[in-house]
Image 1 (cartoon, helix red, strand yellow):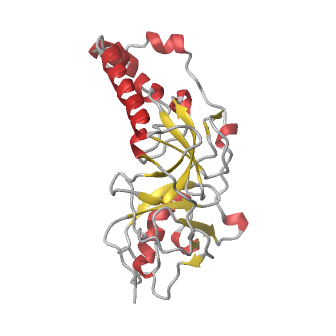
Image 2 (cartoon, rainbow, N blue to C red):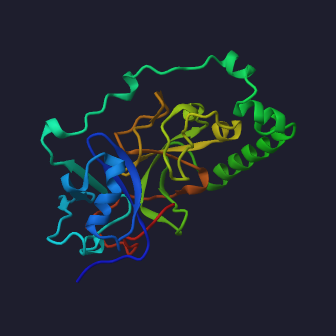
Image 3 (tube, rainbow, N blue to C red):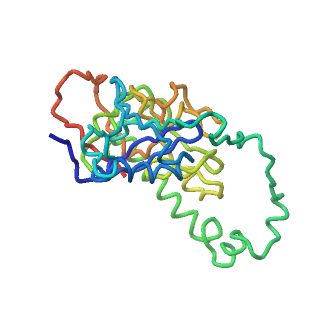
Length: 276
């Protein structure tokens, strides 16, 4: 009997040269998944070995005699489980990418960028958008006050236990931890992009002051289901183990006396929680 879920499932995809979160549809075949993972990992489907890693369980190899017809619903996919993609080609045939931090990059001086008429900055100035909006300060102050009020009402404070609330369901009791940071994230403008909406916008553009100055909640999770170690773009906001740290908005935090989950206990929450 195969286990099949109708909705997409967010999974962490990890390979030697890449790490990213992707939503996977259980109705895909193994061959379809491998095809979709090639642009993520740089490994051709024929050279991919897929291993599904669930918390506190041994890895399960995703393979079948007929990968064109066997669907992923056969395996116990869980939100935020990890699929490790290994390149089975000889080392000489594999893709070897240089460390991007060691590649020289051109950075335009801020003074030169400010004088350009064809830039995003010039467009925002002309259209009075963002920080050039004469009413922006008032709107941002209201948002900040609302966020601070929500933090107080929810009882969010450093050292308190909490669980994450999913944006698509009432709770996500599989992710629990301890609050270690409350405050703005000035460094989010230069970090690496990450799709999900519950995490800081971290592209190379300049964020609005609302985004960087509104309070974020830094949590050290009990299990490695996070996205960092409390560090964002070289700035340490709190100490946590690798993949145990995460930053979320206040509305995603449910404070309470949440114990560390017992993997052998049946708490009735189920295992199909999702988050967009």
